[in-house]
Length: 448
Image (cartoon, rainbow, N blue to C red):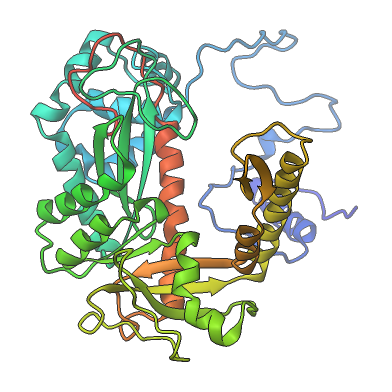
């Protein structure tokens, strides 16, 4: 404890307080956050000689303090911040305050349109009736909201660094409805749901910022959604001659998809399937065996069609893909990771143990990997097990971008940016409450 002196005037008090602050801070710097300092006055300092404290004006001496009462609470600051971002992105071009408020409510708390009024009230915003919300959502298609918002998303993405790499993924949104209709249909669900659903495709830039969203019938195959979304995006923004590379996971890998993207002048990077590895790496296995080093990369070719042969084991060197010379093949890159190998090996051990238990009659007979039937008996598929062991740690990538344009390491790095679209989808799915309706929606406004 240090005594800095006694003050009798406001000026003396200010000097002593500054000295005290320096002693307490011990010359430590202070952040300038533009918070004005409270002005100190002698009148506001207790006089120890009187034994009393200064009272606020209007409060009589000895009067009891009234109990506190909360009149209202809300999160208006959050509402204002989200609204400012909405306007900054240019989405206010649709000039629909009800739609804007519904977007903000869905970001804060995913809930139904009926319950959105409660969320907005908690935010300190004005609320409207459910009928008003329905009337404004009906304008999503008639007033071309999606086209206007997509144009603003495009402008924002191009201003931040361009569209050289785009990421694509697909998800499903289910409806708690009893009957199917033209859009909501029962289809493949990773969550194994039997509810009617829709399929949603999302295209984002390399940072995960949404650029295009598409809505398809619930029984649509994921592979058939890629080309319509990409071509629609290119046509909407007149990008016919703009070089772009589309990255997507192995679920989008189909001969038709790759051919369509290539014919459209678009580059692609998609995950390869492990079933392709034995053929793609046949020459490597012949000359080098199945031993790999951590980080090893094999840049080779893969056939466009199953009946094509593009690798020649007579040549030790891997072929270098060229779009003019290899018209029946794509470029493929296989990378080995020791970390992935440990994970794959652990999974493989568990699958082998399960297969042996089925063969020995210790587990119920189901569709189990590495189990085959021979003369009515279940036996271990040794050949498949050995083949799987030789492929642990490998990950494949298929592309139509030549190595002279994009090295193998860059191809792999671009593919692994896909976590950004998956993150965007997690955020997007969170803003969609399960649909509860007994009739078909007038417009598919949820993805918008």
